[in-house]
Length: 394
Image (cartoon, rainbow, N blue to C red):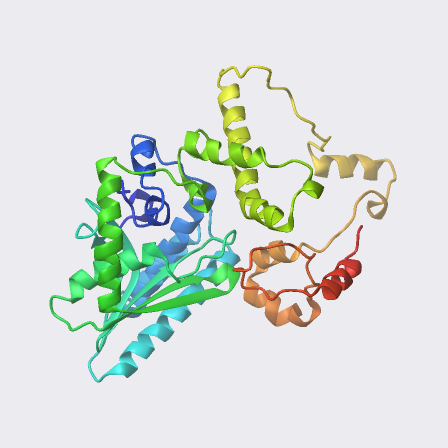
């Protein structure tokens, strides 16, 4: 079933928001009636899904080469099409092909696959639905593959409620006619070279849906939920003005006295909350600026013009004037190589790797303090100081 990505409906208790409403069961009722906001990042992600869907239609659903080429040519005129997006889709499609081939190898029977399939999640979440990017089934194994086009936050398939809900929705389709034993849920995030998979026995997945999701979803649906502020607030529509979130971080802020007077375990506790505290403060600042520009008054604050830098209005005209006055181009302009990320966007990530990959290096990053749950290996004290010394300061 093909869906219009740009016009996807959003359930009150959406699968994509499950990481939030499963923890903060009060958030759906607070968000109710507030319109969804979109962005260029979201529209770019929508386009990446549409482009990949075109490839799947050609590879697996009988679309002719002629139709494929015609539609691809049209899609290349889209404002979000570039070599980076093409590379992203190529990588994603290749990974899906590998999974399809693995499914074929499981049995003599051909696998069943679906793309952009609307899934009914209402058995576990009231009036909820979602869209499975890729669903593959063969020989007792059900696979869910989800594309993440972003590059800001690495998303893991482990304990991912969105993918688990999609798996439950897909299970409802296949469990009527097939004996599904195991489910693989995979996230593909090409821009971060991130592919992660969680495997679950069907009975464990159903138990999670029945014993954990279903009662919490009903509480959230009934409007009887409790607030719980945390990292999951990131995409909440009321994060700027949520009083329980403010009370949590204002309470922490009262502890932020001279750190020299705190014990190590107290510093550790504050560190665990510091990131959320900073994000909350930034959210409030952004909200206040937006509202102030619309006329809202905040005691003791006003909107002023920020600092700006001079800029050229017409570089070609300026170069022409300077050249006419006998200033050589080499004296008044410079040619610089694009930063790596922009170069990859201009000519494609694969091209950059093939042509100059050996000439690109990544120096060690500046030592940073993170929770022990972070996947990166810890630096010893001497190693941290050594790597810090090697980092240029200008």
